[in-house]
Length: 73
Image (cartoon, rainbow, N blue to C red; front, side):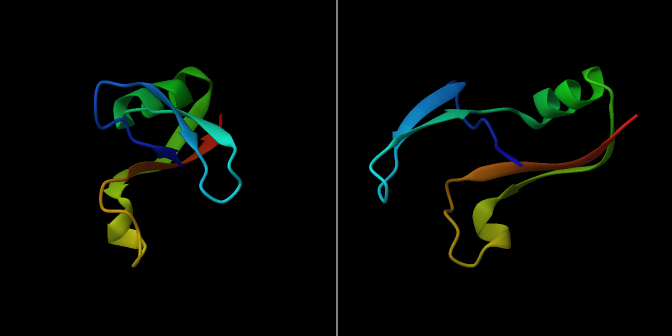
């Protein structure tokens, strides 16, 4: 599971509110995720893109995720 790229930025550094540490994020589109998996020898079983709030009751409405289930060929 990865955060889906919503805007033009491919990366971000975000300060974690609980630990006060910086976290690095690399964003992917669903198309990029599919390509990375297949180019590296994986067969995609299922891949979905959705808003976090659709699956988690207290999720963030602005966060979109791409989820993939794949197996090595």
